[in-house]
Length: 111
Image (tube, rainbow, N blue to C red; front, side, top):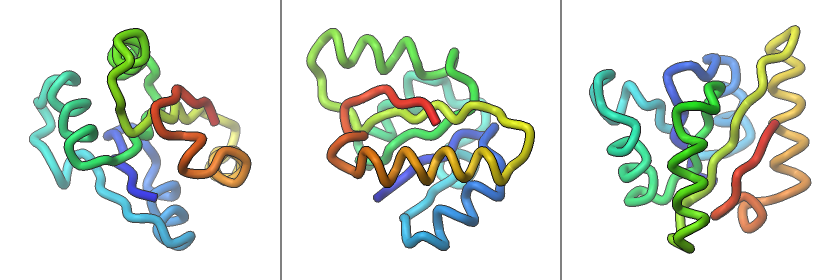
């Protein structure tokens, strides 16, 4: 799968996703830090990358709007902060195994 990781996603998550064979781009690699959320969301759509963010406020409204308007988007995963990075990664892996790429696309997901 192809992911776009928001600034707030821990580096450990990126390392593990790469280890699991996924294509990862961090937001700071792709766009300036000051890029508005709407442009980041547009970039993810154009590049067909699932957005992973720990801050639901950033992209949840944009994803809700896309769903309401029946506009395709690659999907959004809100990574919930846990007591440890290992727990965060375990919940993300569980979601990926359970939902798969087809289950994540065009959906709002929480891990």
